[in-house]
Length: 116
Image 1 (cartoon, rainbow, N blue to C red):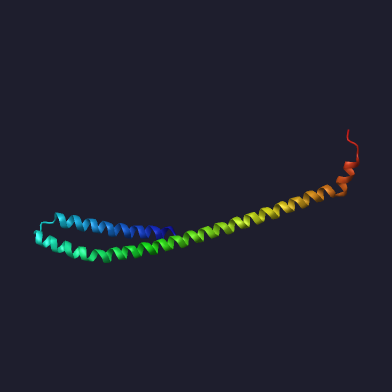
Image 2 (cartoon, rainbow, N blue to C red):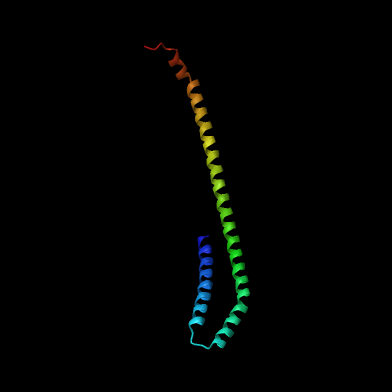
């Protein structure tokens, strides 16, 4: 679960880092202005497709995280429901045992004896 989100973050970081590195390399490269503009134009033409791919990847990651969170929430609710049920059963058993202790013959003979 956590690996999925870290893997998505890694890819986003790699793509963004690659773009920054490419832009820096182009701006600092010893090329003529014409060559640099040509390369920048090709990069700009590829940018919409790259953004679309990145958007799709982020949507998939978000969907996976949402499913994971929903699953974890449901598991927590199930455990809570089981704990509440166990608590209710335990309190009912304690009430029955207490009632039995008050109604037992040994207890009733002790209550009939005078107290000092």
